[in-house]
Length: 233
Image (cartoon, rainbow, N blue to C red; front, side):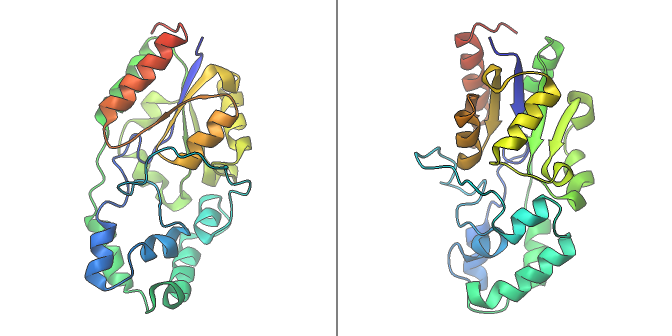
């Protein structure tokens, strides 16, 4: 039986991240994919259209390989990360980055809430199913993302990479989350939108749901797993 459900935040409770980034790159004259590579070290970052499907590949053994990762584990401040972005920009974009334009793009970027996921989490909790939140996140953004939906109401266990100084897909952060919930990995379902993150969870024996742009489909996949594992909630 399934004894707990563990949710990611970005792209699971929130709508997919960085919608419109390709239009921003084109408008600014930056090569396609270059802003994502500059910011995150990955041209197929979470939430980009067409980059949300699980693929057969090895999970990276090292989960801290870029300044963005260092920011997420608290090794860099947000100010230090922005300074690094500006320093690396000419080598990646072929020109300086227009930070004012990028910050305006971020301010204008719509970040919605996947309310079907929120309602499912609330229903699971009401039925007595332990649930937890496991997120790669930035310390300076904590107040903002926690205000987007009722985190404190829903979750007794919240594991934030910037607090615990490790990030997905490091298997230790999944083990830590399971320990805090009081269950073993093979008794959990894990929902995330990132291919590497769900692959790492599967490697530990977790059931997985890779969340795409349709939250109703993710809820249906979760329900199917619970039914298959004989868990009635």
